[in-house]
Image (spheres, rainbow, N blue to C red):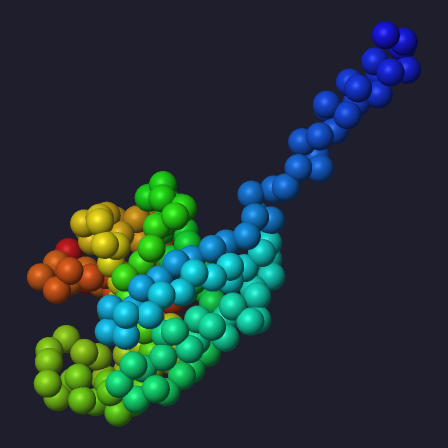
Length: 175
């Protein structure tokens, strides 16, 4: 082996990590099943620092108010929270079961009149909140992972078996 070949090979081994994809450049994929519509969505919503416009449009439609069909632009940072939760839990293939995404003012008013615990100015109204669970993992694990992230609101509804997540101020309720 000549010296030039040896130096070239050594430099390529040393430089390879510098050209490797950084974790931040990897595609961020989320999968959902909507429990009220039985629809499924698997979407690459972000690559590196760039949100994917078409994917966000799919997400907006998927998280629509299933009672009225109304849509809103969901906060992409909500998707980042979901992605970071499934990463923290160590299951990159996890699928979220969605109970509620966007709520129109009409739906929110109806829910306030017929059930307890629905906020008048809910972040569901602005596309900043989602209620979820995993089909095969206790919801307390989602709650714990979300609280550990230290971003947004985390509400734990043990009896109803879901976790509320939002991009508002950092706070928590429901133990």
